[in-house]
Length: 327
Ligand code: KG4
Ligand code: ZN
Image (cartoon, rainbow, N blue to C red; front, side, top):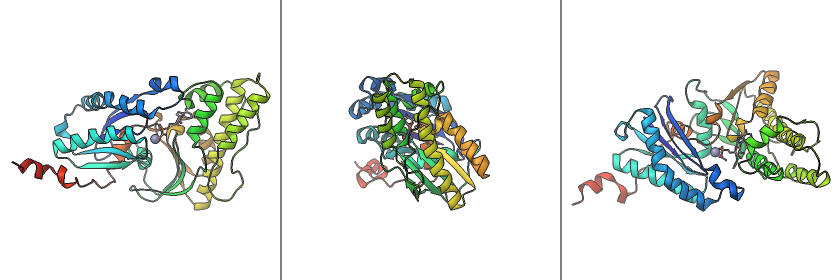
């Protein structure tokens, strides 16, 4: 049994996953309300909040799984990328447990984690496949040939797709975190009301760009201050979705992929899920999506990735056997 810990940004998360990918517990404590008054994540505030939450969240995960520390076979933790102070809290907790119990410590790449959500039960996906990873920090088109990693063949040149959602939401006065709020507002609007640009459209390769779109929304708001916000949100969301679907679908066709997966926080978006489903059906490509709670940051995906990642050797001064025999 693997304990996973994730504290790279503003979610304090712990999970228990079995070696064959069954999720026994997946606890996520979001700090969204703590950061909302600031309009975004404040790194120092995030670190302090992780400190308060990390132990109770781990205890809750073990409780829900019905196990104790003695039942664990390994401890997995996000080592990056992320906010350095926030990462340190999860890493320190993981090191302490691994050291105290003499367990392997597995450092997990957060992006590999997002992909590894696909390898969990009940329907684990087998590579090879092509993946779009769209989150608040990253937007990448990835070729995945085995469980252990990925190769980026395209990515955003500026903002990540989730960042585009969050910045659009802020311009529309929706506050932070903005992705889900923008989606809710867009549900009542007309996606064809405004002709927002699709970054990098028609250009060779699989890179993406969202900064021009954000500027277009700013200008639209300045030009038409009374424009219906639901229409603006729907048109803005449609432009992000169009761009993600276009670029990823052409990558899938050109690389001959038969399966396409979409992961990361933005993969929670219903319009994006529907648009990918329709495009994949037309192309005869299989689409793999994970449950919404496994799209945004969580620790089950980190524990899952640990199954395909080598543990680290403790530095000498932390070696448990050396410590235990010191008199
Ligand atoms: O993967 P994630 O939890 O964290 C990072 O690794 O960045 O992704 C968070 C991002 C945020 O930008 C958030 O606005 C976006 O995912 N997001 C959404 C939705 N839910 C979360 N974007 C669009 N629609 C949603 N329903
Ligand atoms: Zn993430």
